[in-house]
Length: 200
Image (cartoon, rainbow, N blue to C red; front, side, top):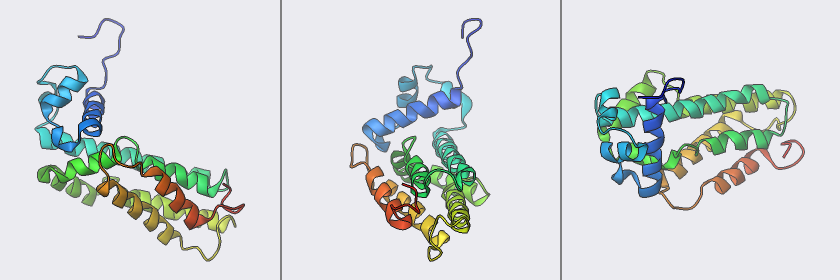
């Protein structure tokens, strides 16, 4: 029980962050409810007190991180005409790898029931990669209207290339493997240019 005047921590976030650390350190195969609660330093039953089961926990973790990723992408609309185009896109592209993105993608693949829950939620409109793709498309289109992206650029193709490449790098990465961020930085620069128009 928390001392008087001390806020009780967000239990979901406490457990989610602990799970990310376990996966990033030892891989998705090492993740269990016990490893999560041990890492979080909390009672063994806390996870099951807040989630119907471990697959639900994994699915909710992934959906929560997907929502964060989508929220970052949505901030692009406020950046049109400001800063550098490539720099703005770099921020969103690299955010796809925050919060253990590659490790979490691998985690979902190891748990079919969790993967099904995630697919169903995304199909019902939960924010995910499609949301990011839509935000990037709209942003590039607006920068194009402002004359900061070449008229020959296809915004939808730029968005597909960024999101698709990020997804590929996530699914083929592994804990301790090569950092995918430099590859994403090179891709964004190649797509929108590194000169004055891109503002890099």
